[in-house]
Length: 138
Length: 116
Image (cartoon, rainbow over all chains, first blue to last red):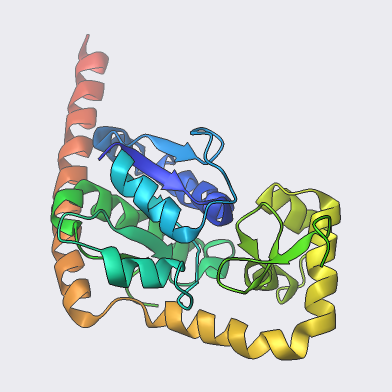
């Protein structure tokens, strides 16, 4: 895995998660995981690409996509792409279960950040999982 | 719609801010929470005019958008199936062991510095 890519719709939520990961208590662990974090701008990714193309790009480049994408319907939606193209070796995409709450509930955000680190730590055994929601229980 | 309009249909047919990967359903998270157009523009790093167009669109089509918005929220909140959660839970113990090890090493390094 090359790193974590924040979708355009998730950059603000990534910042909330990173405040936990890089903050008191978790910084040492986050550094130990050695996961580079990228935005679309960092990698010059075209924001007009369809979900299916973004998913394929992430698989090709070894990136775990953090996305607030909720598209399930339509041939090119992320949900349909995962259903049709996900394979045992595919990297998962990670989606906040309740993105709004990340901004207003510190404990909830911390749970989500910890679970993101858990996924990244064990990423090789998370291949093929499709879409993973964080945190697990709300 | 002309090519210049800020609100288009994305590849899934959902109204979206042109060139942003943001559907109006994303913006609704924040209009429903009472956040300002300026806040939304800054949060998503889009021009204020585009955020305003999305807010206006939501205001004009709120009744038809709301069921779709609530459905998407509910789908995400259901989260992972139980068998995936069971697998993920195993990583938690491993992460906490790793954290404890890192904290211990840092503490030892700190103590060594004090002793010197």
